[in-house]
Image (cartoon, rainbow, N blue to C red; front, side):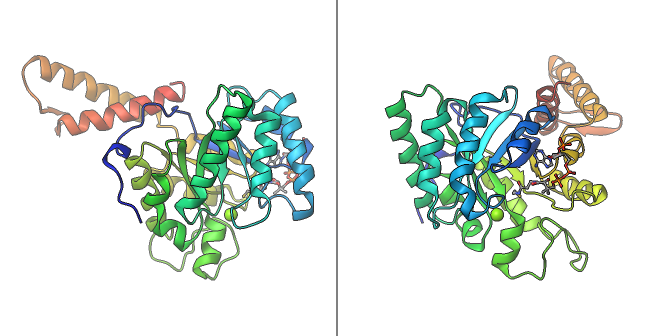
Length: 315
Ligand code: COA
Ligand code: MG
């Protein structure tokens, strides 16, 4: 595997910053749900051609997504389309037909089951050729989904391929299958394990995402009637630094948006910290005390990040 080149590290200024707390997955075969997605509070809509669509329906789902992109107004939301994986027969036509049909309306493509950098290189070149050919003025980004031991093992080599990469996404169902876990509920955290079952993989995705200036996104929680379970799953992911989470049903969006927005109390406290540090600085001090606790440059960076996330969410 290649070593991460120096220039790949750090924030990539050319990459757009997008609000990605809730990502609503919408089956591309359902015209009704493609329309319904417009009315939701999701930060991102993910129009799915992969596992939500039966094999026989893939060609018609492509056409339905193109039609939806050209007719519905998804403005104000990030617009993503999940294509099929590289190992199957559908991906090249997914990319070509979507970008030819509605490339100007697509912010990102989501690549599922990524296991090797070559898969990202393939789409990078295909997109570059299509964009040049069609004279598109938007540069389509990528969100890479990690759902296997191989994908997670090679995550940094995969993330470094292209600065189109905007997000690294966990796929809990396929990951549990690949690892051979005794589980059939997508996204559930098993009680038999004394801790957070997805800690390793989510932390790996967050740290890698930060190295490349990308977002880190948790996958879905399938039982959409279990609000408590969703809240727990999203909350644990947020504690690890995850930026947002997939939703498979509109009812999950408010819980997820709430979890990935800093509280008014946290933003208020962060502003107090910044104010106290500004005063300390004008008095010539780097560190000072606020309510009996030390605050310094590191506290400033933490507080700035919280304020920025709050402001991005309209606070
Ligand atoms: N996107 C947009 N609209 C959705 C939706 C989704 N993911 N899930 C449900 N809706 C709509 C329904 O069409 C329905 O609309 P209506 O009130 O206008 O009739 C409303 O929300 C309530 O839906 P409900 O009846 O509770 O659920 P359902 O039985 O229609 O659908 C699922 C349940 C699980 C089949 C559906 O939520 C779904 O397909 N989710 C996404 C699956 C997916 O994308 N999987 C792959 C990624 S993990
Ligand atoms: Mg999957």
